[in-house]
Length: 248
Image (spheres, rainbow, N blue to C red):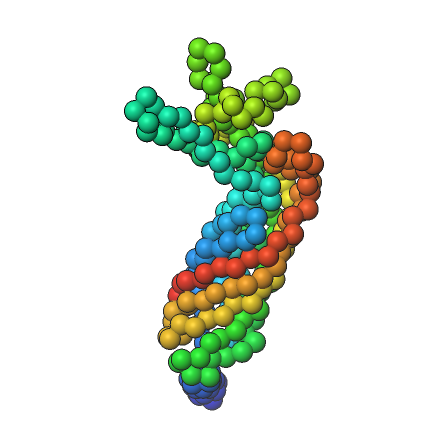
């Protein structure tokens, strides 16, 4: 009987602590599921996050991220031709000199820590987020369509086709997402990031936040993205993201 009374008292205390935390702007939930869209100076990505609370102030989080990393020298262009009637016909956009499209699939784990509660329903909760893990780099050859005497051909870069690939007068346009998927090269690596998450959602069950941070990616082989530009192993980046989800 005494043991049962102690268990009931502990349960009441946990409930009372959760109520006090809610009143003070400290969410008390067992888990959360978040989705975020982020942009950074060299690309963009989407993230799915699952979190499990160890306390009202700390959660263990797991993230799956899919992103594309772009080269600073990338610039989209279009070609145009004029018909006999004077109308201009534009080709598909392309990136001159691009050799590979570089995707990333990341799986990581880390922590989220509450460093500033809302104080009231109209306030903002501030979280520190640190994540690191494995990154699968995927380099897909970049194809373009070219005009050669008598036909139109689709080619990726090779030294044998250098003069054709880098001749603006022969370029018709890009090929979009059609080609190169069965030629992707896998490049393993690691990544890490740290940021601050600002949650302004009116109700604690809902997450509506913006996140700022810095990160890095390191790959075991150099990644070549542009013709005549050296490949890189290390990619530092800053990012900003919109985060949405719920807590339970």
